[in-house]
Length: 304
Image (tube, rainbow, N blue to C red; front, side, top):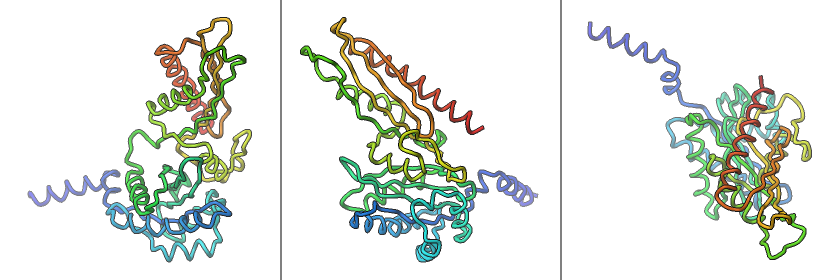
């Protein structure tokens, strides 16, 4: 009797989707990674990343990693480029040929201060980029790949959803006359970084996010998606710039102008006037919360 009850209990547990999913390893195909054209050094680095990351993920019991030789052969056969991997049809075809659940791909993106490695995890069955992450390219490449492996290992297990990113700047001082008052554009940059970090955003340089925007076929002015059969990017990307201006009539009040744009949506313009200090920071937090919330709601309405 006890044995029968035990078997029934196990059957019920395995019937639950969450537990059944944990019993099955996710089959992942790694690569390719792409480097910028005309930069042989970073292209070589990109070629090495796929092999190192596949080896890193092979040690994680959550995954079954498709053989790299098989991945390379099919990528070569399909003549895939970074542009090709934005097509949902191509991604689905690649996934079927490799019998994979996820495709892990990305690019090496040089920026003003430090080169970044962008890693995308694409659900091949839905054509959606589940999560995307930026890792600094260290002189010791394997140490960067270890961090990338940790990111991939957490994909799908964060109840808060994918991490959003923001590219900040430039911020400029638009004051007509200095009048002994400081250029506040640097302070504005720091305030914005602090405000977005408090909201859980990753901060990236505009050059790096520009490559992501180009890859998912967004034009550089309207930032509106081209085509419908595209791989959908689930994590949010925002562009924020603006400036500061001392108001001559008050002498102490500062007017901040901020432009916020979620990639793929229309920009929002904010104007905040106050005396520099804690009240100004509170106002920035409140205005950002409203603008970001409106952006999320607008995106949700378009997706419905």
